[in-house]
Length: 282
Length: 257
Ligand SMILES: Nc1ncnc2c1ncn2[C@@H]1O[C@H](COP(=O)(O)OP(=O)(O)OP(=O)(O)O)[C@@H](O)[C@H]1O
Ligand SMILES: [Mg+2]
Image 1 (tube, rainbow over the protein chains, first blue to last red):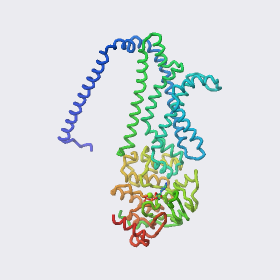
Image 2: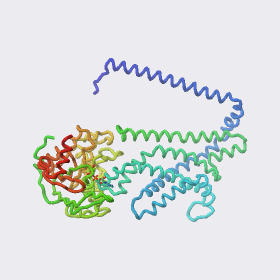
Image 3: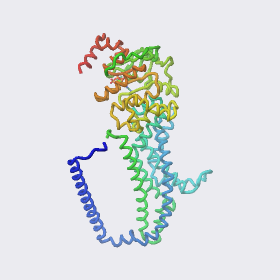
Image 4: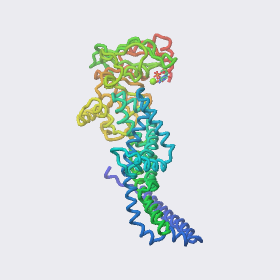
């Protein structure tokens, strides 16, 4: 293998391929610069640009509001980081409950179905307001009474219903023969789920899961409507006092910066699984 | 598959699998009709018959992937348990190889083979791995241990499926048309592994239309039709001189192709 040297013709082929690759890179770059340049020119030369520029893209206000937004943004990040794993666990439990076979688990199955149906019917923002204002008023013993805590609970409750449906679709998509062969080996049904069905189902639903998580990252901003001083609240606060909307654009930029790496990571993970587990089967 | 005298190392002993008056219905359809069958320890039984005659159902009943409505099935003198841990243990004693290979797509070849021993039998991972490598070598896919099922050919996958079942050290192996999803050149490599298994004295129930295998390795051929065992004979007698009309008819069809 190691002492193989490419023939003249192979070298020629490679040179041609290289030239073609170079040419397409040049073309791609040129066209991209041209299109984006024209778009920018179109926007900047529009009659209202001057005013829009001042109210939404003002450098001074961006710098002035930055620290308050960053402080608020930590709340969004924390909410997301804490809620996300809880949602995954709860949603998986709900999905498994809906797939339970045993007759005596019928009430669990029905309860899980009811939960997903009802919760998905209620707007997330409504759940947040209800939980944040309603729950502390109950003055329950032994649980935190902060609005922030209950906002987190509301996000977990809301999103776990959606994510449970994603998991359920994934579980249903695994061919029954996989369970059959696990059972034939002597695994119990729960073991078959744990070692065979769920790992494959999770891999299959990574793209829709990612979609829900990008969505969750953004929906952490809904807590501002419950009076939590998050990034959006901070931006609105600044805007109201200074009659400038630049901070809103800054918040948008924060959220974009947070979601892009997550999307890239999931793509990478997905590709890796695809490569080894679906080789030849695609 | 130039193997002769497959019975050389084998002794056919006491009864291991016993089906007594087994009946099963799928709704209106009577899929197993009064099946009485005894498979002795070390015996290789080939089951043959037209599509829909109940061969798969028979196999699946033996490790209770299907329940039966009447009659009893026992393994090694004990009736099949109804459920729970005892049933799982029984299934571990009965190895099954399906038509479509059913390897676990997200696990490597090695992990496919060690999963059962580790999770069901409680074997230590290192020990299970050593044993798995031995079995993979034996079926000729030792080099592929680190790969994923999708990266193997159909024949290789089926041999892994056999190794996976063998890793549980089953008392009996059931094969349900193990080669019918394979390209012709891969059939031989799987049958070779099965013939080798038969020679080592494994008790086997094999649903297959491969006459070469039946002639080489089987002690007995059962012919099923419409849910009943219609004919039972040595391979030689069955293939050259079938007694029932239905068997003659069926052999006529498969031999013409
Ligand atoms: N789960 C089921 N529900 C209803 N009918 C079934 C079920 N499984 C099998 N059958 C029917 O039972 C009959 C026997 O099926 P079985 O799979 O045992 O046949 P087979 O001899 O293995 O056929 P083949 O050679 O096509 O694999 C068929 O008519 C089939 O349609
Ligand atoms: Mg069948």
